[in-house]
Amino acid sequence: MTAANPDSKAPKVLRGVGASPGIVAGKAFTLSRERIVVPRRQILPEQVPRELHRFQEAVAEAQRELQKAKEQVALSLPREALLIMDAHLMLLADEMLVGHAAQLIEEEQINAEWALRKVLDELAALFRKMKDSYLRERGLDIEVVGELLLRWLMGSQETRLSQIEDPVIIVAHDLSPAETAQLAGKKVLGFATDVGSRTSHTAIVASSLQIPAVVGLERITREVNPGDLLILDGSSGTVVVNPTETICREYQERKQRLLVMTRELRKYVDLPSTTLDGHRVRLAANLEILEEIQYLKDSGAEGVGLFRTEYLFLGRSDLPSEDEHYQHYRRLIEAVAPHGATLRTLDLGGDKFASQLLMPDEMNPAMGLRAIRFCLASPEIFKTQLRGILRASAHGKIRVMFPMVSGFHEIREAKRLLREAADELDRSGVAFDHQIQVGMMVEVPSASLMADRLAKEVDFFSIGTNDLIQYVLAIDRINEHVSYLYEPLHPAMLQIIRQVVDAGHAAGIEVHICGEMASDPLHLPVLVGLGLDELSMPATSIPRIKKILRGIKKSDAEAFVQELFRFDTAREVLEFVLEEIKSRWADAYALEGVGGVEAGDFQCAVNPFPSPEAGS
Ligand code: PEP
Ligand code: MG
Image (cartoon, rainbow, N blue to C red; front, side):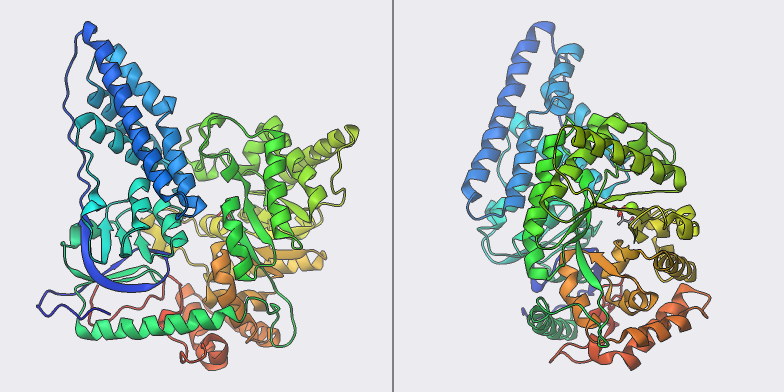
């Protein structure tokens, strides 16, 4: 690892989202992305055709640039990265962007740059309002493509990465796909960006290229100067600017431990997911797009516990046909065989927006016309998907699951439409699994309160803690100002999960969990003790969770969980959990050759590893 900066600059620790794991140290290469200042000109009516021609030329040049970048890296880049480049190429032909700008040139008689800037500002405002992080990221795609076009219009096309020669850590507001494509051939140690989340393109490309990355740092471009020494930890989402010698040594040791840990965890991929006293807990994967299937094999996932089907509706202007649904789910189920997959029906609306669905603009979208409510209000869209799911069920073990169910009316209506879809297929002689299991997500408080009765309506429950925490604790799950209150170990959450598990088991059905809570090692003994039958999480988390699961006894976890109910606050619960892990399960949490449990071994947001010297 590079030696620490000898001068007296104070070290700074910046925290963001770990997008791609790994620890690296190196000099910062900063890319500025100042907003391009565009000239504003009113043009004469007779100048309109020329201006339109200039605009179309710029579009064609931008298309050529992207196409060329794509061809250059077609063999070396993973499919996800190429898909991103395709999406950007599609945007260059999009009516909403290119078509609308051309219309403004004509109607308002303004120059092409000004017209494009107006459209970009309008679209940016629209996407910024979206609560769903995935969709907000798609707004960034438009920005990136817009800037590419503006550069061509204004004649400044040099690429920002062409100056990189030595291995560096890139610090940028964001990276465009053409730029990320260039990273494949460069000695880029890692990158850190102001914007982005785990679903951002930067994150997707970083992890598929296996380049350590931290995104969503908000201000890193303002905090770092070119040439500053950085340590970037893509596992914990931390960047240390100008570290001291001692901090460098600490990270060097941490890096060594991470390597040992990764090697150690590989051994668990093919082992059964059972506790020390022989209790099985299924570990499944959460999936959004089919391209992620490749990671399932290396994770040891026993199938898919949550397939977020709404991603099939995003980034397009038409609705998926029944056949497209069928083909999509069939590819999934054949790829995960012999395991099964739980397909959650469309969970869009309010905070997740698909342009082709004309959804209402709501004051309080998290509680608006979303998920099952939207589907019941649009039965044809819903039944098209249900027929696609049913047809795919002829090819493997598919379960269907309804999101955001708040009570009997919704689950009964959803099942009625499923029956109608099944009857239609029967009448046409189309094969499907007549015994297909039907489940519901428990993510609305009313559903958890009525779990004992709702359990008689379905074959399984899956607790969606991401939303359930939001509704039980009244914490907007995406609002950073109240994120400190977003506490999975809140006593109210423990009580509610226990109630749902007990209700499900009393009715003889399985209870799963598919919210992010399932992937945090700290929560594992809690969830095992509460009796969950399946934990579904991002595939990469599975080996770690399996290792811990195999080192604890269900009976111990049950006794431990009983103790949790005497605490009044989430902090007390958390402190107790940490103490118990150290005293009761140190072996399960320790990694061979790595030592005992340390705060830094957890990914839990409340438990980062601040360095006393680094300040914060
Ligand atoms: C949840 O709410 O916990 C969940 C898994 O669904 P989503 O995150 O897609 O809302
Ligand atoms: Mg949810």
